Image (cartoon, rainbow, N blue to C red; front, side, top):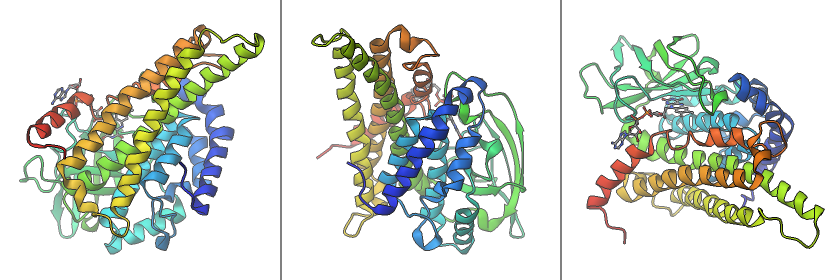
Length: 392
Ligand SMILES: Cc1cc2nc3c(=O)[nH]c(=O)nc-3n(C[C@H](O)[C@H](O)[C@H](O)COP(=O)(O)OP(=O)(O)OC[C@H]3O[C@@H](n4cnc5c(N)ncnc54)[C@H](O)[C@@H]3O)c2cc1C
């Protein structure tokens, strides 16, 4: 079930090499020191992989959701934090392409991003909005074609390393909390002050402390359409599919380690099924189901915008909102279960941090899945939608 285009296959092969030769060997150090995976990002830049979502006419690869998710899943098998950085960056770039791509400012910006391989971070979370992405307290202040925007962000992954950040804010100081816009602020036009550290359980290489942001720029940097549309048509669908892909990738690597151990044991006693082989079989079935879930939804998303598809506006429907939320809930619950199962299979060799079968980092990284937009919040939204929605 891999995409066939030759340009995609060569990009995927390059990413596999980066995963094997750079991300995987540094993953433990990135995790222990809670540091940015700088070597991996340098390699992704050198391979021009940061512009994969940019249309071909602007110099990028023009990859769809399915291809981007496969790239993230592949990198996750080497380093979960690196894959999360790549996935979050792709979500930001895709949002710019899909909602700013017709504007001269953003067309020029995207063409420049291809050349410079800029990295874009995200600031949607804010102190006081309690994890609700669709509400902002901070507001854009406009004057004479310029804006200022200050935000007290709870979490800003790799923002200290980014070349630009996409920030949500109220449209004006008078606008209600849900009347939001998305603003591109560029390095050199903002000041960041960390408001805490990032000594987290997992995803330690994403370097995601809180930040006070002070920024200014030209009004053209404010995306023209409401953030409500950007969230429904791009940010949520791309996040949920790319995240599901990378959570699966983390689980798949843990399972691969468990598989290697079981085969080692089997070789030692030919003709005997190792005691932990059945546990491996159970987890393998769960892994396949998860892989098919994100891949099929990614395919549906791409088909929506292919000739003859229902079009992007369909993503504003309750049916699509539920379907994407179901993927997020299912993937964020299944991936930790698979890693847990891999730990049962590997036993103490998986529990120790210094063996070829260690799955501790995988376990800690994948536990972030249910918190990245909390499952409780998503389920409450689904519950409301299901009061009025009947499938089929
Ligand atoms: C590794 C990582 C990287 C991140 N990077 C970024 C980033 O770069 N930029 C960014 O903006 N954000 C980022 N975030 C933040 C993330 O996307 C969420 O916004 C944030 O984790 C939510 O904070 P919270 O857990 O306090 O959320 P809340 O949604 O307030 O949830 C807190 C608790 O309340 C429960 N809850 C909340 N609402 C309801 C409800 N309606 N019904 C039932 N229960 C409810 C939840 O289940 C949960 O237990 C990152 C998070 C992680 C883990």
